Each structure stands twice: as C-alpha cells, then as structure tokens.
Image (cartoon, rainbow, N blue to C red; front, side):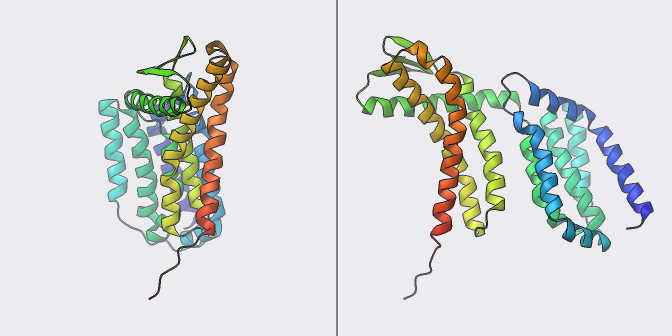
Length: 279
C-alpha cells in the first residue's frame, strides 16, 4: 500500500465511524448506566488493540502484499446497520460494526490479514450490550436457579431455610435475591475474561474450547456460593448483617472465586495431557 491508499483507508474508517455515532452513544449509555452489566465495555477495544499489536510484524507483512477478497461480509455489515437504524435495534448495529470491520479487512487485504484480525474483531462482541429485555428474562431464570441450588445445599447442612421464588426465609427473616444477585453480571464478565484467557493459554484447541465452556458453570457456581454464604451469615448472625456490608463485599468475592476456579481448571487440563491408548 502506498501513501494514497493509506489516506483512502483512513478516510473510509472515518466515514464508517461517523455512520456508527448513534451506536457509540447507545453503548456509552449502557456502559455507564446505574447497575450496568457492561462496565468492562471500555476495556474491550483496548484489549483487541493489544492483541493486534502483538501481531504487528505479521500484520505489517500481510499489508505489504494485499490480495483482496470478497465484499460479502462488508455488504452484510452495512445491511445489518440499515436494519438497526430502521428498527432502532442498536444491539444489531453493534453486531454490524464487527461485520463491517471483518468485511473491510477481507475486502482490502484478503485471507492473510482476515485471519490475523479474526479473534481481535470477534472479541469486540463483549463490548456490545445485549438488549435489556433479554437481560430481564435471563436474570429471572438465573436467580431462581441459583437460589434453588443454594437453598438446597444450605438445607443439607441442617439449617432451616425456605425458598419462595427469589425470596429466602431464614432465621425469622427474609432475604430477596435481586437481579444484581442473579449471577448474570459475573457470567458476562467471566465469559469475556474466559474467552481471552482461553485464547492466550498455550493449550490444544479442544482444551481452549473446554476452558471457555467452563466459564458458564464457574460463574453460576460462584454465585451459588455467594448466596449460600449470605444464608449462613443470616443464620449465624442476622438477616440485616447478611444484607448489609457483607452483601456488598461478597459481590467482589464472586469474581475472585470464579477466576480462581478458572485458573484451577486451566492448571488441571494443562498438566494432564490426553494420552492416546495403544493396543
């Protein structure tokens, strides 16, 4: 690419950025909202840029020999942007931005650069907030599920505890498992972390996928442990103690427990290679 080509590319990227101004505004609002599930959204682009920076030598070589490619992904991305504007469905607009970036690298530089950009662009998905209506539905199911498992486990230890929906009756008091305690926030954050963690770990591909999949049960298990801890504090001290400062501190504990479990799983699968059985 010569200097004129670079200037055209910069102009094209600028125009694309202008086209997505409403999407940027929507994402910023969701990232900074009260009780947001996407406070990590600001970090995701920088992580993607860092991943590209680590591949800067390969990218530089690929740019010197552009092959050109299909325009289908670029057109599909702009079509999704059109639908997003028509339906005011900004989540679709966020997805379209990923398609446009991927399509642009495919169209201008072909397969070599497309492969290098694939994961960093895909990782940007974690900065696109899912619709609030979806969050409400998932929250409801998750908090009922986590509460049921936690109450069952606490009951096995001999503590009298009763569940009614998302309410827990214990020690002559009531605790309500709210949306923020459903575990969805930790699940979303842990999926973002787990995806990056699995990508950078030096593991066989199938182990990377296994590690990523384990982010789901890790997030749920850590939240169940949190609810159980709240139940024990409510039983041994009081419901007021459990729902006070301990409740707030345990929120951070969810991430610590989940991350520790993820690191533990990585150590186990890394130290136990699958050996082929020979007859």
